[in-house]
Image (tube, rainbow, N blue to C red; front, side):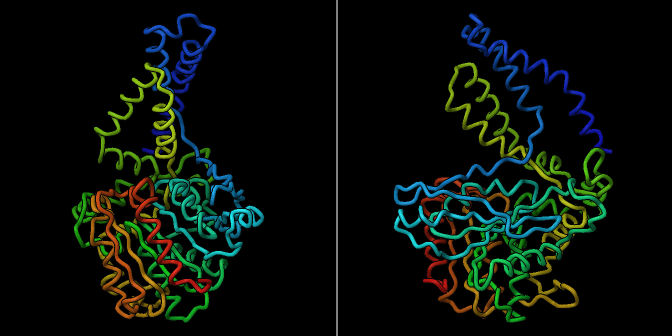
Length: 416
């Protein structure tokens, strides 16, 4: 019912959006002599703000056409190397001739960036991808919005996620490197355990976990507390809704992206209100730079996708309530996932000192869970002053975190 009401509210506001857009165009037109007056700018700003906060945000474009390496613009082509109904494996192929002009080798360590499946699209990691492209052959998991998957395609759960990671590492080939950002940490580590136990030739050469709830018992945050305070049945009764028409996934039970978005925004409600108020004033003042920065952030932040019921509920149950992986109780297809099975996959963990989603200690717990990895193949790093998003995006990531990950991968790569 909630999903249908959400859709009804969106379509009901269509006439108001159209009116706001007409008002915006009228007062924003250079042909209007009153457009630069105080009343004109205020009316324009009001209409623009209303239009933006009520519109539907679709899946963003990657917008990565090139990267600058040694002052050379290296062209980038995005190629789909593998797909399932639930995910596409994208490869960011750098132009070999441009690389040679930039005096870089055309072969580089292969890195699979596992994007979180927690409400936002993989494009949230655009800045992460751009940094890794400076030194690596980059792949990323491009998860599909569950409401776009017909119900006849079946289920996608926590264990399907593990299988997908293994399948994609197999497609990439022998001894690639995997970087898991936030939510994927536990299933990626579990997949690496099974591949190590099987002596799979395509097991990763290294794994880097960034702000991941590997063991959510450490330093619990508001998110962790909610998962502990509420019984499992509460999540099933209150967070799961049915996809309405006209979406291809009609009838599928999902955790809607808009519910996740509202949950995230409520954690920093005052900050988001201030941001939109500042945006309104920037429109009145005709501050183009401030307008652009605001739109770039919220065009990404407000673009959300749905998760399947089974994946969301199993993640709550296994990761945040039962702590199955760190307690050695995670079982996949009759096999207990043993973190001690990993002996030759290098391990790096990255945490943010001010992370309010995955508290300090939750990610680095992986080191104690993998005692058979040699100490010289382990690296633990905590970034001072960084919050959750600062772990994989922004200035601290570019200047402090990425160089350490780059060097760690180089030290453990077969091409080095």
